[in-house]
Length: 462
Image (cartoon, rainbow, N blue to C red):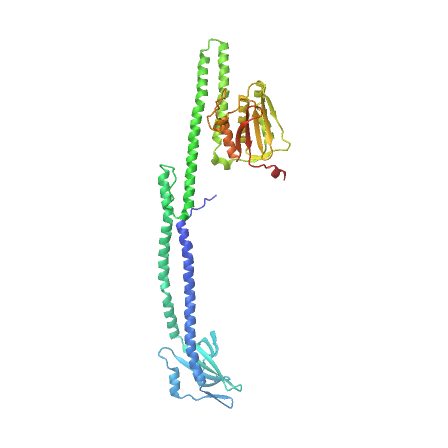
């Protein structure tokens, strides 16, 4: 698949600003040319029609026949022009009465006026503009007076009018330069943001100051600062995770190493077996710790979009998780009870992570509940929730928030523990938009409730 070409913002801005400008200039040129021709036509047509009407006033009708008696001096004055050649003709019913023969009575680009009409034609080998005026005697007899003039003055007048439009080219050049400068000046704050971000990102991830930026660029700068903040948070989580791994693995690895040394120095087989049993216990503890650390490493809020959330039955999932802890419960003679809900409690969740959270809660409950105690798993439908209650020592009120932090254990906690279980549960709950709370249970110990924002049972059933 071909990679998409990168775009230049400056080029796009110039194109989007220059193309409308070119269209406006082109339209102005076309309109100007049309206006120049229309204006010269109207001015010169009216002059030509006035001359034709003056000649028409000299036409006389005798017995319905037109007659023009024009002195030679008047005829000379009528056709005189320093620039153009002027011709005239009077016709009646195809009969030539006066003037030059063969002037066309019709042509192209005809314009009609109240006093007559004007059109383009060709006469005596020259392009001419002809004005035609009809005259009658009032009884139905008609004659037509034609005045023709070459178009030299018209063409010069049109050129002079068009010359007025020539500065549009200079205006276009000036506008293009101005647009280029404006675009460059407008993009300068963006370039400054990029330069500032590049300069700072190599040495610091602190936010970029946005006080001196245009308001339109504030969302862009805020997005960059938000990205920097997320990178800082991600690096902080990575550093915290590395520190947690180093801290937690140091003790079990040291125990395993010491156990191996003791096994090598054991004087007899029973002593060796005893040391190997302790090593097995340390290995299981290290394996559980590694599992928790791996789960902790997966709980990155930035990876939430990559998780596959599906409709999950809380009771069925808790039943499967509880089955893996039956042997531990039997060894400690703990009554592990799962109270099935009346209706299925279905939530949108990532099953593996939710299993890890329930496993940590159940492991804590079984670990700190004394022999012969009880652990109960029950459910709420609205809002959907799962609750684990035990008959252990519980957690004092002043410690109920602190125990959800990493590496923190309650003062009453006995036995082995990493202080990561409830922190993992808290982070998994956050990924599911759920809350986790710790209270005293009716059994006398702790009660941990994992509550979800909403159920998907209706959606599943529809």
